Length: 280
Image (cartoon, rainbow, N blue to C red; front, side):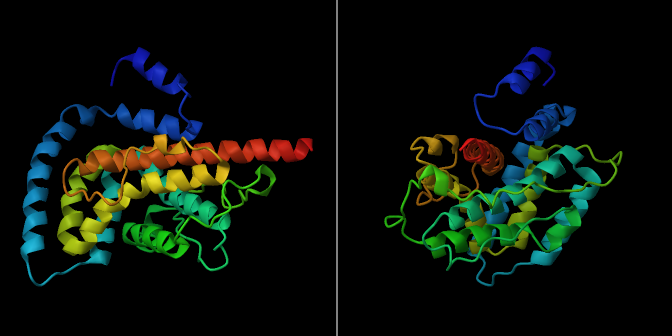
């Protein structure tokens, strides 16, 4: 992405909510020169490999998974080969989804019965504990425990919305290594086959379809705040429609962008509420 006019437009366009830090990280990530030739190549080779592994694992009677080796491999790759900008986006995402889910919990009638999400890795090594598997499982757990939304008192009165789940995102990155060249989307293309290989077939399918709950999170936040159009931020939609291996990296990127948009929308709403309270 070398057209300076396009870059300036991306940085200036704030019609969609996005924190300045996140926007700068995304635009810098998009300018990675490896995307020009490596990403298209991997989309072909890794997608073919993924399809083979995916269907073989579904046919094997004895299933296996290796969560810790999977996360260790991911962490090693992130620290040595993925750019700091992409690592920052990954760490931000873990914090953001936890905070969005906790915002929903704290504004639900079932808040006393639903345990909040505590995944907030400050560094890559912390992801041995706060890892991607737990990230997906916590999403499923919270949505299951929240249950039916029909009896929720949504939208909540403006002065009663609890924004306390939104906290500053803290993360640390080591010094940039000369080997750290791979952007966010290319990194996912490289690792999608490893995910499939080292997870059981049902675990991998659940991970693929966890992205479809983006619409559900947006709708719940919109219902709390009285914004019926907030689900338009979500590209991944309709969890009952199961997805498999097609366009998984693209849907993963949309998942990250959607949560960044949703977080920025919430922080802006919290700031307005604070100004309103101060003015009162």
